[in-house]
Image (cartoon, rainbow, N blue to C red):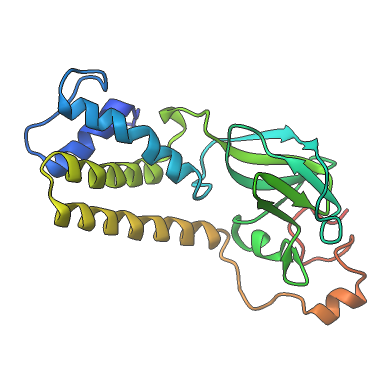
Length: 228
């Protein structure tokens, strides 16, 4: 027996509807009537918002970025335009393609910094960085086949919260479902940050970084594969 679920927009919508109504189900988001219309209206915005929030372990793309005018040259060496379909920047692959500096990949993400600042930063549609390489990112252009069970569960809760406002117009139920979704989001992000059982508080001091010549090769506390 396999417990792999084959998720679809309809199955997610029906699970969400089951939390706000005992009788309402749909066979397609294009069904006639207010129920399907509400599902169709909220499904994509809910998923898009969650994709922008975190990695969630979803499928990622890797792409060479296009350099643009660096308006922060006093802070960063390079500036790149982000892909149009980027929902969340997962990591920055180094030039040799064998390792990645990331924000949220367990302890490696926390140590991918120099003097308390990230090696790359996403702001106002631009990736600023000190290294050259390829960007790994969660794309808006994925399907339900890429959803993890954790992500799908959060989508169901968030969607149910929105539907509770439209169908039974139950504000208390909507707030309760959103609170439950927020708790699940926080748990999922915490589990991701704790991947690999990191031991926090053992980061190199600024003095050690200075004596080592910055973030160059040879530092064993940098993310795995970063040193040559």
